[in-house]
Length: 305
Image (cartoon, rainbow, N blue to C red; front, side, top):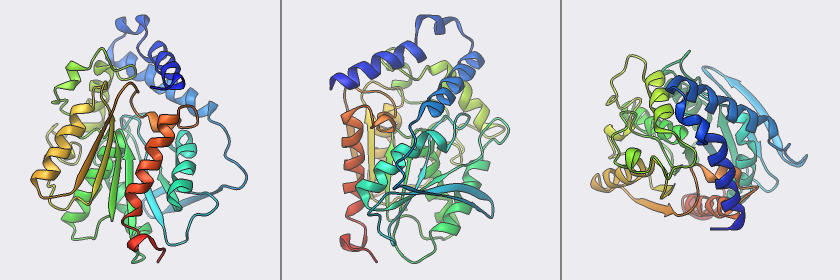
């Protein structure tokens, strides 16, 4: 663990899992988490002038392209942001998108999908499908990624596309995906103390808000229980101490059982969604570089189309 990562862990625990949070109700934790993410988004640095940001509003979706210098025209990545399906938006993810765009030599689309409780599942899945149909129909490989809740949404999108007989992404890159909103993973309780960011009670409440009237086992909100035989080559990155560790382990096992290709990278000494603060911690930059290398093998043999 780098000194910067150690300092980040310390600051995150103080903010998200401090002593005063222990007496908060699940709804209060949801509000606290949302406020902290909103504050982090406001403090996010502006992108360099050389990075092109293009807002897009299409039929049933909206978001923006982030394109760093050197991005190749035929390379594109659709990435879904985290936030428990109830918090945040794309504003806090532009720095990550810029770094991924640079590393992968591709433009990155950040989808501003609808969130709960105003828009429970399957609203986000519908937005993801609409965005895919509009952005990924050019006949060239498109990569798909997501972090945390966005990682779960990415898996749900692959399954939704398969159900419609639509060609899915060439490869999938996931950072600590949340794929079981029934909270059935062993580390949900086992890592409750070691996770410096996610409080199981607050995450449990977020799951209830997103599921709405759906059962926790419905693949639209819990894609761990959906079909895995159409999953593309998948990279999973997760920290050993977070409550969502078992979601990644179980997802990797199910992909393998279905005959798919998957790489599970379990990092140690970090925190949930650490690549989102790659500007601060070197491990975040390393994780983004690893994701770019994963995608590289599926860009038509490494050449732009």
